[in-house]
Image 1 (cartoon, rainbow, N blue to C red):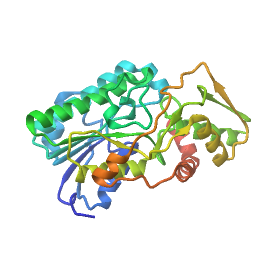
Image 2 (cartoon, rainbow, N blue to C red):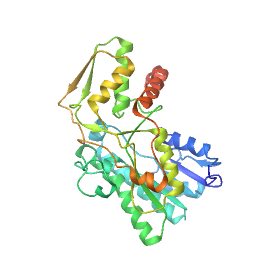
Image 3 (spheres, helix red, strand yellow):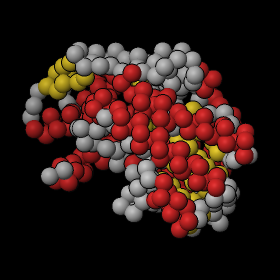
Image 4 (cartoon, helix red, strand yellow):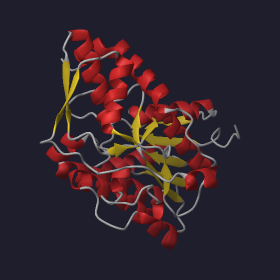
Amino acid sequence: MSGFFETKRVVVTGGAGFLGRYVVQGLQQRGCRQILVPRSAQYNLVRMDDVVRMFEQMKPDIVIHLAAVVGGIGANRRHPGRFFYENLMMGVQLMEQARLHRVEKFVAVGTICAYPKFTPVPFKEDDLWSGYPEETNAPYGLAKKMLLVQSQAYRQEYGFHSIYLLPVNLYGPGDNFDPQTSHVIPALIKKCVDAVEEGRDWIECWGTGQVSREFLYAADAAEGILLATEYYDKPDPVNLGTGREITIRALAETIAELTGFDGQIRWDFSQPDGQPRRCLDTSRAEKEFGFRARTDLRTGLKATIDWYRTHRNQLQFARG
C-alpha cells in the first residue's frame, strides 16, 4: 500500500451499490479515512442543483463515478429512454462540476455496452468507435460512452485529470438477483437454486445460448478501478476484464452443475441474445497500472452461489 489514498477525500457515487461496496472496501483497506457516499435520498444526481450541493458539501479531492441506472436485456428494452437520459445527465453534470470545483481526478466508469455490436474479438480499446452498439442496450451504452468524449475534451481544453474505464460484465456476492433487472449470472443462479429448492425439473433461459460473454469478479473490478485511480492518468480508455469468454449455454451448464440442478435447461429462441460475442483485450490495463484479474470463473461462481443461498429468503422478503 502506497499511502496515496490516506489523505484524500474520495467521493464514490453509487458507493452503496453492488460494485460500489467493493470499491469502498478497497479504499478502507488502503487506509482512506475520508470516503463519502452520496445517497439518492439526499442527492438526486440527475438534478444539477443536487450535484452542485454535493460538491459544495463533500468537497472531494477525487470522484469515482459508479452510479448508474442498469439492468439486463429486458430492463434495457423496457426503459431505453430512462437509461439514456439518467445515465447521461448524471455523468455529464458530475464531470462538469468536478472541473468547476477543481477536483484533482475524476474516474469515469463506463460499460462494455459502449462497444460496437460486431467488434472484432478480443475487443481492443481502439475499436470503440468502429460501429454502433448492440441495439438492445445502445441507449445505455452510448450515454456512458459520452463520458469518454467529455473526459478527453476536458483534458484537451482545461487540462482536467479524468480517466475512462471499461469493465466487462460484473458478478459476485451481493449482486442484484431481482428477476426484473438482474444480469445473466444472478438470473441463472436464481433459476437453478430456486428450482433445486422447490423441486422443479426444468428452467427456461433467454435466447439460443450460443453467444459469448466475459465476466469479471466484482472485487477484482474494484481493485482495477483503484489501481487506475492511483496510477493511470492518460486520455485513452482502458478495458477491465479477464480476457476469457464463455458461451451462455456453457455458463448455464456450469451454474447448473455448481448448484446441483440436474434438470432440463430450455432455451426460448424468441428472446434476444444481445451482442454476439464479448471478450476483451486486457493488455493495456496490465501495462499501464499492473491490473490482472485474480478470480477464476468457477471460484467466483461458487462464492456468488453461496451468497445467494445464504441470503435467498431475505431477498425474497425484501421484495415483498
